[in-house]
Image 1 (tube, rainbow, N blue to C red):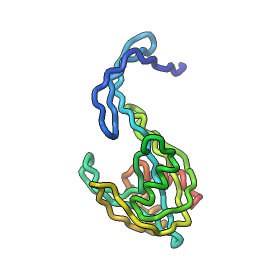
Image 2 (cartoon, helix red, strand yellow):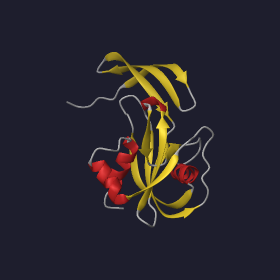
Image 3 (cartoon, rainbow, N blue to C red):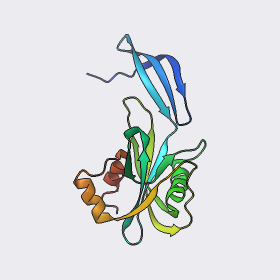
Image 4 (cartoon, one colour):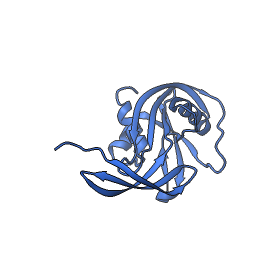
Amino acid sequence: MSIEKEKLIHRKPIYDGQIIHVFKDTVELAGRETIREVVLHQGAAAIIPVTDKGEVLFVKQYRYPVEEALLEIPAGKMDPGETPEQCAARELEEETGYRGKLTKLGYVYTTPGFCNETIHLYLATDLVHTKQHLDEGEFLDVLPMPLKKVWQMIGEGKMFDAKSLAAFAMAKGKI
């Protein structure tokens, strides 16, 4: 059995927001029409910042959709015209107050069943302290954690943020 590409027949806008755009698409699949609900996102970057002491700088912030504060690597959405690396550098400094040497790890599709969001993943080393400058309405704590404890938490299933888990999977053997 071969995988057949779905052909867009009609796209109906449902919601046009600041972060996402939602559509109800009619597509043709194997000679039949079917519906796809699609969320389009401009993309994002996430960074594993590792200090000279071997600590990872995590951010902890409340995430409204899941109703809890999560431990995550710094991340944010790309601005129009911004490259993934520019976004990673900007978000690293905004959220942690550090700049560093960025090494691309790869990228992931967060939820490809209904969304096109791509998160580009980076490792940041040679960190230099500057100044944190959070976006308006952004509240988070920066928490340094020894790398050994990070791997322990991952192994024990105590980290729940998918982009952070994917980044550490790609960084294994590099940090």
